[in-house]
Image (cartoon, rainbow, N blue to C red; front, side, top):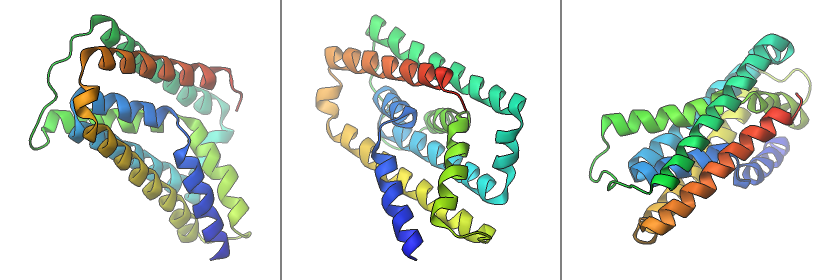
Amino acid sequence: MSGYGGFVAFAVVLVLVPGPDVAVVVKNTLSGGRQRGAWSAVGVTSSNAVQGVAAAAGLAALLVRVEPVFQTVRWLGIAYLAWLGVQALRSAVRGRYPAPPSGGPLHGQALAGWRQGFLSNITNPKVLAFYLAVLPQFLGPGAAVAVLAAFALTHAVLSLAWLLFLVAGLHRARAVLSRRPVRRALDAVTGCALLGFGARLAVQRA
């Protein structure tokens, strides 16, 4: 339990550090409203859960060690972040913003938000590397797969809680954020951030 408490404290700090997942959730919340932003957060969490369970089962170690596969996933992630960044910058340049959907979640909005959140996270091999490098630090040798999975899923749940809190905050500030100059500025910042995260992933070595 002491190891679990230490991991939870570490995971809380980790999820609070802005990264590409936060940028994608912000982008979806601004473009599609609260429902799309929330589904984007669920997409990120779904990917975290998949990668965490894969790491616990030992599949992630195999992927990381097979260099061609690792590099393919890595460059797919770089390309996807770049594509999202260019989209956001194009939106900032055009400055045309239809009203976000209101009421219940639309199937298309939910699916689009979930897909962008999931793909932005699943194509980042650094997430797998994180689970492989961090989990053993808080567990002794020979830990059961179920225990490893529980630790990894804890990180996923904490990430979801933080991202949903962020979406709620953006929704509350929608009166200010919906103004055209503010939206253009936020799109420009988000686009640059996504391109920056992609560039950092491109120059970093595994």
